[in-house]
Length: 173
Image 1 (cartoon, helix red, strand yellow):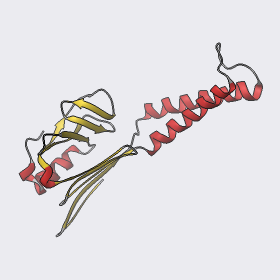
Image 2 (cartoon, rainbow, N blue to C red):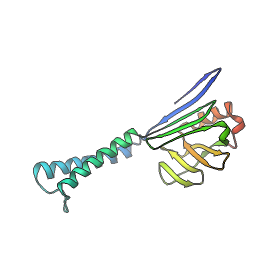
Image 3 (cartoon, rainbow, N blue to C red):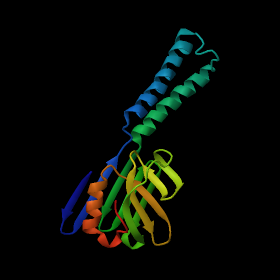
């Protein structure tokens, strides 16, 4: 995350990833059970579990668990705010690019727990894009739509938008 400033270029950037230890422990646990299932059923020849899957099922479980780990490793939330507008990318799912003329107002909020992390639809803030935490940039658009981008640096982001885009601020923390 960084803020760059030159006469023509004011930029706030933040990149977030799923880095909660308990999430990675869970994912590694799932993958470990898949590897053990392959070892026990396909290599040793013993059925894996009291109600074993087919060999193809064990392989599919292994592939699924590895794909899940790769997906969570690949996912990230990139935020960029500059003189042109707000850019957000929740890799690999969503990209948004909003110009300042589309923004009615914005503010940093404490949104609490909105049913988990990731992409959450139909919340009080519209669609929420977050990786962790409970604070974010709530954005209301001129056409009535709204969304929220989670942040790990709410104070720095709040200072940035107050300093450079105060005409768009509705309320703050």
